Length: 197
Ligand code: GTP
Ligand code: MG
Image (cartoon, rainbow, N blue to C red):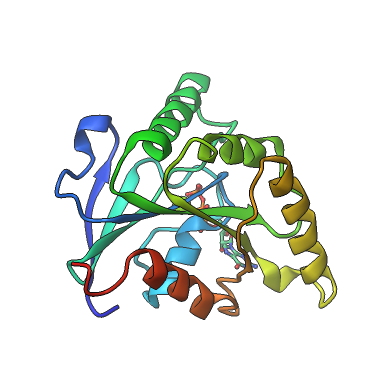
């Protein structure tokens, strides 16, 4: 990853890129750490804006990497405090995005490692059942867990994923101590191989 540029923020369907570059999306409930993880993975401290207050990211933010593909910072799924109509709108938009947007090659679904998957996390899993993109779960904020809390968290999430018919990688990550960075980069290289473009 040499050159990363913020391209645009997209708030409606017509705004999605049409250049066909592959997309890697970071999806998950509000405040789970999507923007922080994008910064950690890219090694750019303030590329994506983060906030202690949920609901910070309110558009699909597109970052182009080496002219080859996009990283997409998606608004929080189902944040209760934004207006109900706005929340429903994003949920529909995200649903349509994961199920019909052909350039989307890989979905990273971020789940807080400290809690079992919530109803919103399970809604995301259900949406992704109908997606053609590869699916990988990233457990966030694992710096907050104890040594044996980590494998436990992975196991708990895998059990829920099984109920949705998924047998997919679950990666422990932390934007604070950079755990999981190499593995996340490897999955990106797997699904957006260099040389393909
Ligand atoms: P929205 O844009 O509101 O949907 O949130 P987001 O998912 O992009 O979360 P964001 O990256 O803004 O982080 C939310 C809060 O969690 C911030 O206060 C971050 O500092 C904190 N945070 C994110 N990642 C980590 C992590 O790995 N460890 C710890 N301890 N805190 C984290
Ligand atoms: Mg964000």
